[in-house]
Image (cartoon, rainbow, N blue to C red; front, side, top):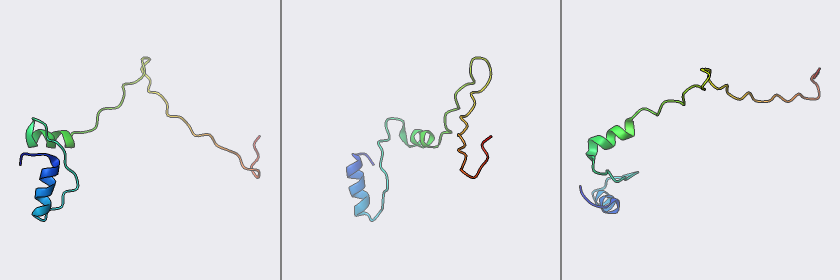
Length: 70
């Protein structure tokens, strides 16, 4: 169906269909829209220049009064 998302939503509501999200499909058609929505996530950032991966930050541990902090 061609038209604005509002027109499509109104037509669907009149037909008793519930639509939770409407998007403009662009010029690629339904297949292109499907492929863009189901594509795998982008790869992670490459390792650092020296070849080692950046280490994840380690959360600090806070000692309680009952612990020996030596």
